[in-house]
Length: 451
Image (cartoon, rainbow, N blue to C red; front, side, top):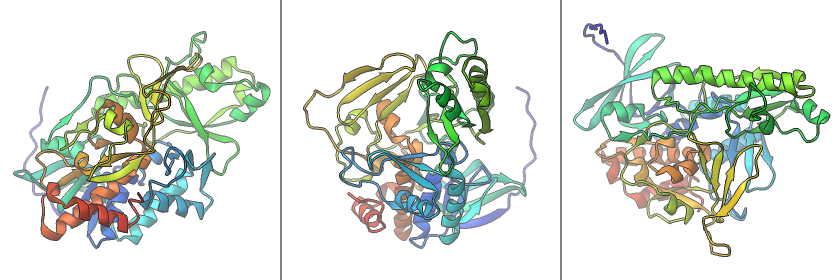
């Protein structure tokens, strides 16, 4: 590979803070806001021109249940519940079914609500800003180099949270990360208008069966399709049915290819409707994401790897910082369909257009856990002094990762990381030395732990 030698330069420090959060998804914003509410001076760096990550940039408009699997007790609170309440005040959220199901968000309103959270907490935002490189001294991260419209600059801080999803900060620092060979594929969502007209013409219409029908030359390879109504609209629906197998979106060239392939598959879905389905020509594409929805890239090597067995059996941890009920959900890249494992013992292998294969991982009648937990140790990178990870970087094996990677779980890890950094700041502690009982108490006092 040919190289160009760049001349040495002095990079101006544009801002100094107690805490710098790299990545402005809901995970990153909640980390920043939660720390700032404890009196910490915080900066947050985001590549897009708005916050929200997968929820906003990738159009994934569903947050899963805040209750245990029986719908009897709320197990998730904090900024996730607060944001739902704030959106409800603007008629920008709808609940689907009972309390143990999901919330559908107006993600355009969510963009503005996250702006307000950041401004109210006096967090210093950096939008349209890309993290470039870490500045380290020994095991300690002292600053991050950024690039924005102004040029190359730096943000200095005492503590950092990697909420990039891809582990860009910890990886470039040389902290332990890994990538599995069989990555769950990313999905390009789309906003479609007119699907209700097709259903009127054919009450048995199933978009998933049509999209993956091998009889059509435009058919997508066997995957999984789901969707939800766009809140506030009777005619718009978010559809997630594409699947870009073999895409490692932590690598620039493969991310580019995945973006283009995902949009090609959206066009293929529309062509199937146009060419093979009655009234399909009345379905129109009304929105594409700013970024493909990424399920998995790098994994951080932390002090504890949460296992699928620990998760499904509902193991209780002394350093638990998050609760969850979302099922194990593995999108296969080496075969058709998707595998679900539920806390109540059920297991389903689903392929659109084929009968679901039902089985059990837990014997019928055995006691099951109403929710699972994520330990703080799964956010502490090995050999880290002042850097935590949050979101889908939380350390877990394949099965556990398939459950904790969804947004309501990632949101909680962001809050926990923000609070932990605030506590570490008080006594200049290594992140691994934060007193977990005080961490849990502070989270509980702020409403972030409700059980």
